[in-house]
Image (cartoon, rainbow, N blue to C red; front, side, top):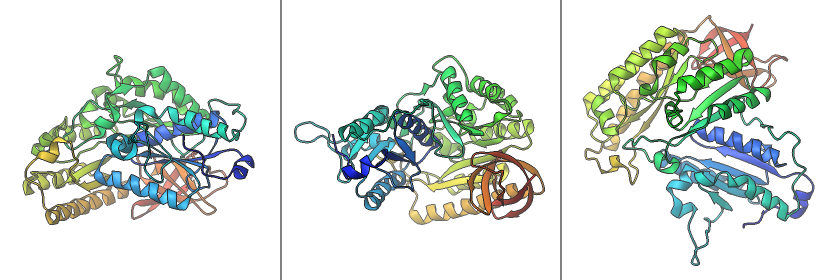
Length: 444
């Protein structure tokens, strides 16, 4: 086992400090929140990633080749900035790059790349606490056991609750299902217990996250609407519920009915990827253009405050100008509040990597710019639509003069700081003006 790099004296002066970094999806943030609670219960002090720490854990992302590169860059930067820390990497990038992060030495024992002290696959994440505790015990540095074993140190203003892992879909461009395995649901009672702990810790917004959130419950004879309804009943007027991401084909009539509930955020992140049926078919996506538009319209009819964010992939193999135009038209039709736009890059061992019709860089770049322009216009209209309105905001950053947060609709909001505002708290605000993609407001 690799030893802590920091000097003995520094550890004996205080408890072991652990900083957690989550890259990529909201599931990774939820997993780091769970890890924070377990580390705190074991007697460690969980600190913000910008603070000095003895142990650093990076939960990696592999959704694109760029995500893998970002993981490597973050690890390199952390090692350079904090040369004496014990650096741990885990997550999807570990699973999809075992030769890099989980190699065996000449006698069959696991080794780790230079600069990394320990690596854990997704299946091994539960061992990280044991690993950190063992390191502390080697140096006799573990603080007394935390009195509250359910303590959840806040990593963010909002609480991310992981309710599902894995994915049974086989999108032709995606490798995450290999890293995460089959879809698995957290039981209803376990989710409700997590929600209660988060509310008790002071979180006013609970973000319900899953690798394939829409599949929650299928393996245990339930459906996502059952979970959402139970959470809404449990939360009551103490907070609000937000769904992290859901495919259009997983939005059931029951969810549409629930969408008018005042404690369910009227914000739907529905990955589009493409507005072309031909491209969606080649991607092995489970919906088509008409269904996506129909679901968005039904949600808006149920709750006129509904806002949509999405992911769009540009330059998928075989994408024609007509396909690209179909995407632009749907972006305008839906009127997304925000779009995450990225160009296709081939992943080894995926079906899409073998497809013909690769789009040249110049064309992909042009199409990306055109989608960005259409998305920016849609976002401007979505922000203008709430001018002069009252919105409910959860605050995620507060300094001496300014508070920043997100409305239930996922509009970004800024307001003058006041003594009664606190991180993770919830307030009503009145929008006074629109400044780009930020609503200027005052607390009411």
